[in-house]
Length: 180
Image (tube, rainbow, N blue to C red):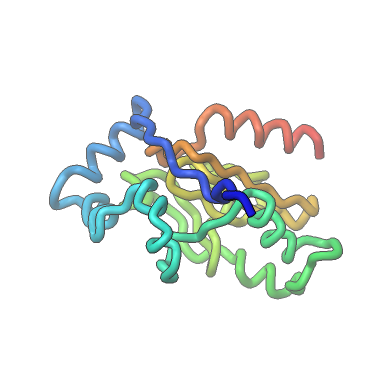
């Protein structure tokens, strides 16, 4: 058998964008800030997970390794359709708002969290009310919107250190919303 191409692509570095991305990068580099403590204990960068050893342990909120199709399929377990495994009651429980307000780690960006997942917010728009999922380092976003039966997963191999959706993601979300 010949050599096969690796399934996991390494991340490519990207500079913080002006505005909140640069502000977040500055806070992460400034000792004494909650942002610095969060992103530097240990130091977390996207390329850290290019090492297969870092994908072996379960590191909460850090090393979920998926392709976009698999992640969308995971979220399909909560919307009507052949892959549904969670009851509507369970879905309502896990998306019940638990916290809302400025995020002290992400330099006061507005955030909303449910029991397990993040909720739609100005920083993480998804498809609006009823959506729940999570974004990730580099501009990733995956979510479910049970009311429309939609799951969405956008992953990139360029880690954009910015806590807000970038232009390409906004365009994709707008196209999905328009198609519904």
